Length: 367
Image 1 (cartoon, rainbow, N blue to C red):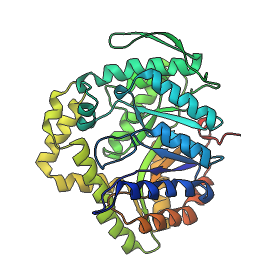
Image 2 (cartoon, rainbow, N blue to C red):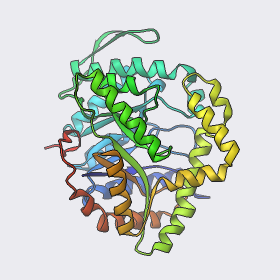
Image 3 (cartoon, rainbow, N blue to C red):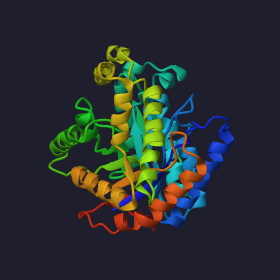
């Protein structure tokens, strides 16, 4: 099984400068390869302290020069906020300088603060995502970007440096809702599971996506998904429980605040009706209940407990691998480093030894 680590660049420690956060997170990423992790990831966000990595390609290009073997993944690049030409060029450059180690994760975005900051119409995000994704993915196969759509019109231009290998099988999207499953399947995009729903609902939607993928791709099976999780590992179960209560719940509350999951007005934005329903549910049961629910979807405990929980999630989803975050929610930096080291020493080797069957070429280390 493939296991990677995710840098989160979250600044939730009072008095902590953004400079200190970046030095810490880059240091964590530089430890990933020596510790045995097989990939390094980061997510794009803007304008607040939820996640401070505004240019994932830039960060991963730096990491390409600091590493030799780990895969380098975006979790994700939000397509509606950018010119597709620039995304295609940045991804091609990353793949060149890393000798083919890039994994492309894409999404359509949810944070209202970010759509407003980029002066983008949030209600058009699904249509923009589809057109941009089609143009970008074709350009990474052909070396030429062109498109004539409702929102995006691009005359044919070459991508230079030209892409030198296919991105088929190593492109993922951050979520699959019932409305977007056919879109992802038709584009041949795999799934990143970032847990926000009960696992039975996630599995139901994953199976729906797989069925549609077979219909849209002449019976071909969809790529195995990747699962992201916020992880707290400690030899003492009581300490791990405290980490869950304070820091994983801290992450959960920060996600609620950044994405405004409790904002019923999201129901009025085209393409975000699901989140309006979620907001009504949060209003009914309370913010604390939702934060507890979101926190309980993550992974924490002793090394044995963490291993068994990740085995359970692999059985549920038939995933190809995990992307683990170790620093989040105001966790002190020294504790975050110890969290990552404990996982790397006691859980990572056991997960990597798991034989899940089938081919996962997209996650194999580049030669």
